[in-house]
Amino acid sequence: MRTFMVMSLAAVAVLLGAATIPQVQHKVAYLNASRILQDAPGAADARTAVQQEEQALQQKVKLLEDSITKMVQQYDARRQTMTADARRREEERLSAVETEMQATAQRLNLESNQRKQEIMQPVLNRVDDVIEAIRKEHGYAIIFDVTSRAIASADTTLDLTQQVLTRLRGSSGTGGGR
Image (cartoon, rainbow, N blue to C red; front, top):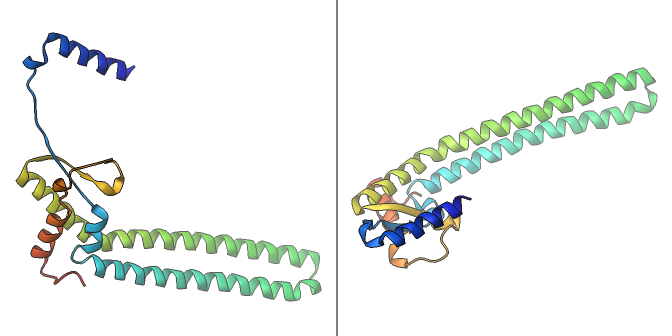
């Protein structure tokens, strides 16, 4: 229905004389956000910090998993000598411990994701600031990101990736982000 309305309005505009409708030219450009985030000053240090945080999280989760595995092995070793009631209580306890371990692992993952965002946010903010400054300076109405695959084809002279990287490097004072 919406497409029909748009087509109808377009047809009316043509019938009324498109020459009477002012033509507005909007400048557009594109960039490669993945490349910018890969090469932006400070990005390599942020990625290293994120990797270190991920390794620490993996170690914590492994300790939790190893702990529950050891408990289960100990239970299995003495299971045959336990009464049915004792087995039931121990299985309930192990189930509760496992549930608690899963909740702890989820909490750690959530905290890790928040920490990753905190680590990367200064880099993302700086990239956003530079892109917005270039957009305003050159009068671009829209800047697309080719990483999103929303662009099927484009004139390579409209690619702002290198301009953004040059400006980021020139104003960062970090010597290349490493």
